[in-house]
Amino acid sequence: MALTPGAPQTNKSLLEKYLTLDQPDDQVMAEYVWIDGTGEGIRSKCRTLDSEPKKPDDCPVWNFDGSSTYQAEGSNSDMYLHPCAIFRDPFRGGKNKLVLCEVFKFNHKPAETNRRKTCNEVMKQAKDTHPWFGIEQEYTLLDYDGHPFGWPKNGFPGPQGPYYCGVGANKVYGRDIVEAHYRACLYAGVKISGCNAEVMPAQWEYQVGPCEGIEMGDHLWISRYIMHRVAEEFGVVVTLDPKPMEGDWNGAGAHCNYSTQAMRSAGGIKAIEDAIEKLSKHHVRHIKAYDPREGKDNERRLTGHHETSSIHDFSAGVANRGASIRIPRQVAEDGLGYLEDRRPSSNCDPYAVTEVLVRTTVLSE
Image (cartoon, rainbow, N blue to C red; front, side, top):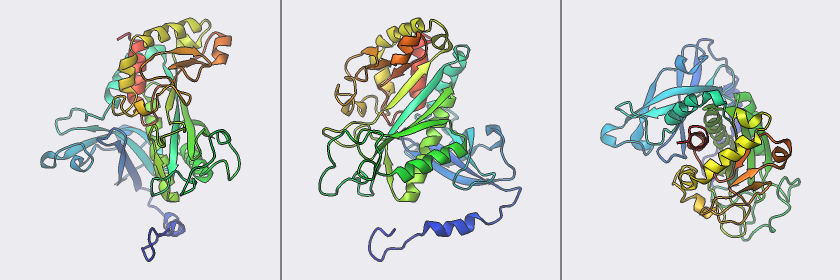
């Protein structure tokens, strides 16, 4: 679709001709994916490997220009990409891969936005407790002009109410993108477990998990990369802004469902209550860890309205969507299960979120 009259156009269907060309058996396209200096943006570039990698160590360490990704100065710009997880490439198919990478500086220290390194160290310390996570990733679809996809250009849709889990062209916008993303994640090997239309029109959610330990961050970051790529092909923009529209509209979060083996075992409600007690003593630390700007983004969302708690107060309750921590009704009845931390923002770093949850509740740091 041309952005302006007479501008060059691309036809996505033409790409199919080239994707069906035979690819040499000993040549694999590996798309290296990493987090940039904003802590939210995703970058990628491709290289050819001589064989199909089976594990991250089969992929060579690579480099990139950090001065163009907010991660280095131009006078000393080389940064290193260390492969840490591999997924099937749903865009190229075949043996081709998506290679998630950690970023290291010239002195081999982790980049400031490489939160995976410390998260992995914490998960190894806590491995005997088998921490499980599931994250509910909310996001909003936008037109190129930044206006929510499907909204009237000179006004607003009707008030919230009919859109959550809605059906019909006047209730949901962009379902094609959602369906394509879901299938692409399944193909890639991402542990995507569901999706639904959200409360604000043009806002959606998908869930990733359950994942154990470091796997949570790996799978959520790749799912975000796939989402941006799928939306790119539809000519739509995805935003993870926690409050994309001011006013009487719901924000976007990344609620984190969390449990340890003790919580999932008989009588686990006691372990859940103990974890909540520990979380209550470190509210500020968690708020700082739950968005890339240490609470400044979440401040616009966590107002105590629109199904959120106040950013300034800690609260917990059974089936309470206005609390910091929600214990699902079924968990309370069964006496075991998990807790839901509703504070993380939609643009959170899942490595930071899962790390601080384990530090507080398991390692008691």
